[in-house]
Amino acid sequence: MIEWKLTDTNCSCLYMTLADCEQLTPANDSFDDSGLYLMSQLPFFDNGASDDIHRAAAIMLSIRIDSEFVNVYLATYAEGKSKEDALDAISAVLQKAEKTITDLADEVSKNYIFLL
Amino acid sequence: MTKYIVFIIAFCCSTVATAQNQDPNSALVNRISTNITDINLSKDVIQKTFDEVFSNPDILNDATAKLLTAFKGKPGVMKFMRDLNFKFKTFQTDNQPASLGFEYKYENSWSKFQTVGSKIVNQSISLNFNGNVAFKKSYNPANFLESKFQYNGTFNWGAKSKQLSRNDALAVYALDRQILPLTGTNSQALADLLVQRANYIHFSNQYYIGASGNMSYESNQDFSKHQLAPGVLLNVGAKAWDKNGTLQYFNLLDYPFALIRYATGDRLYLSGASFPSALVGVDYVVPTQDSVRKALTGNLDPFSRFRFEISFKTKAVSVAKQVIYFSADYRLYKEINASEAIKNNGTDRFNYFVMSLESNNGFFVHFTTGKLPFDRKSDNTYGIGFHYDLGNWK
Image (cartoon, rainbow over all chains, first blue to last red; front, side, top):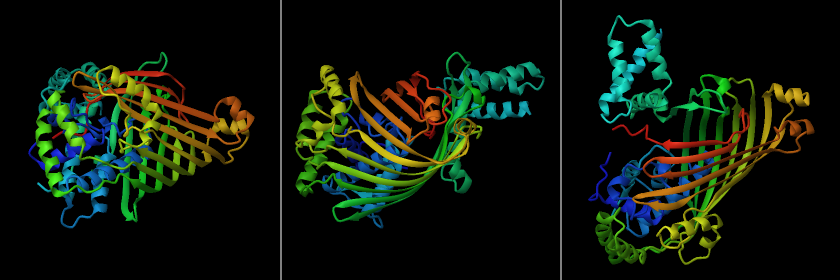
């Protein structure tokens, strides 16, 4: 399990990508605090909605995150991993209300290699 | 037997208290632990302690969280237990006393993404169980248990971006290094850096359409009513990632919140991420036991049921360092061509609406009205409190 820290590119790229996706507000959500945020606390996750809605939201967001990693941060997929594997892993975490952003960063670290 | 149960609960609670010094129930836990070590304890004291513990869902949730944490990384049944989202809660309706019970939710899915041309296709098979169970069933207002097996196929378009050059990507990394230490400060320097960075971030809008086939088994908590409900669902969604596009202006539900955000010091914008999601479907319901329906119609013939749901969540306002989100979800279940007897009894149509304000520190206010199929009452319920995480014991 990775540690949520500023010097880890998996964490910093994930934070900024979630901010671009309007899931975090940089002026209010400090980087340090956001590692412990639950999926259920993020705007894409409506706690009152059915699982069908949660799954759709998670799939859409996972595709958007992957697109930013690859096209903005020029990330490549980790050895033995493909785009489909990464999307599977990311969307699985996004669908679980009790998972944290650090849990998500952990999956990111297993599936992507960033430029820096 | 009671003594053993008290001991197990107290053991879990005391372990939890040791692991987390700030546990709000620590005083109670210490008292229970002290009592339990006294072998000459009177039966009345045991009973009193038991009642005290057993009426407090928070302390039971703490103990459960600790137990589930121990299952992390374990295979088989242990993995099933870990994936089970189990939460004690109190139920209260009208003037009835509060009753302890629990909410459970389990989901396991097998999912596969594929890239097909410009689309990303996802296929999944999932197994879901969820429901609310009160230890005194007559006090359960949300008396609906659902077990569902589902196949889902989705098609996604968009969320595309032109790939940055290496130099531009390095510029984004450099900006990130300046931005991240400033997060949470609401400073002008942070705002300026975010504007610079936004020049590199351009994405197309995103669209989603999904179709599902499912087999559900629905019941109340004592299984005196139950039915099978195979059905099909179609759900759609969109995200307006293109800040120069027109799609964002169709997020009609976000207009009032854009004004609230602006009035409270935020910039004026419509959220591209908060587009409402919706689903429609038809279920073919096969009642297998329902004494009320049988009395009304004289039979338990299958019937068709229309289903609709719309969900919306957006940023409402920023207060100090907290972001407060507004969310709403509306569900409708409507029997198609219901008999007059069913209509007159009011069981042809079920409306359910939940609305919440939640902040990132866990504070929430929520309101629910209406009922789901098999729910006992159609009540207006208000709630205020704090969510805290069960699954993050490190």
